[in-house]
Length: 403
Image (cartoon, rainbow, N blue to C red; front, side):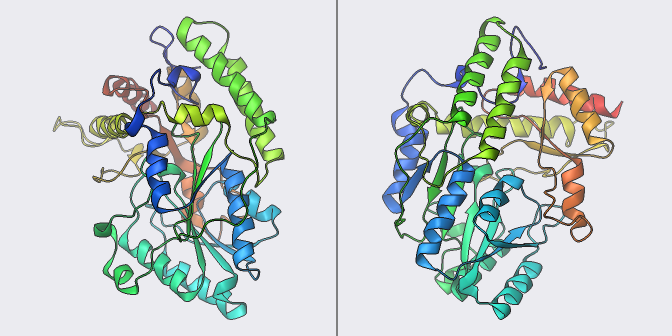
């Protein structure tokens, strides 16, 4: 279940082997959060689901009329679950085939909800995709919705290494600056996809208002226990070949099932994960992800040999690398059977990810672009554990899909 050089595996969940041995001080992720906290209230929760539930609970304190949620049609079910359990009335706006938000559809849907209720009753979700920057059009729309009275939550899980605060002025559209309104009320970032933590999510209140309800002290649960064991077993396997990948894979799956079953808006991040955040070098992680993404682009899209054309069966979903992008992974569109491609990559040693299976709440007939993305996107690993040499292995496995 993984490409091995010795016991090196490319992709999959992080393990304790990926935790640094030194406190990186001002270059650490913990220090980055401290800098964010100097400008905005920051809360550390146990998971993304807990963070969503926590945000909803606090927003309800500020606006009791809150009951409607307008969400993008391409998203993970875990973003919806806390809101559904809270009794929110959820509807969706379109996401285009290139992952751009359909701003016109978003504004029309928001206006319809406001006519039936009010903007003050509405929470709009905006989701970052794969760590790439939002368009000025998206930022302008979010600012306009806030100005109209809606609350706007930005899910920046995919760009957790490059939080949106303080949002750089050059990236703001003129309409945003003219309105004098920041695009987002609050930002949520789950950390497990980007960092080697056992648990953890960040809530940043970009509106500057400290939350009225704070999480309790950390309490160990089934989710944490299963993930900690899985990370230990994976570290043992990668370091000396001890055990079997199926054992830690099962534990990672059990952790997700435990989180699906139970989470709390009051559960804080564990002390272990807080300590790990001091041992993550943010600058290294950003540089490595960008270098690895560029290497995959060169091998799978912009190949230098004039006689070799870009691979038609593997279409990079984001075929350029903007200067402020910090890629979560390398998303490709597989023209054929995505599940078969996933299995073939695994057999070749590359653990690709599915983003995402379309939640049953999203009607495929109403949102065909999102349904196609959900059926054909695979995300190749390019994170900070690896080098461009590893990306050559990933690219070779991906090219074999076209054979």
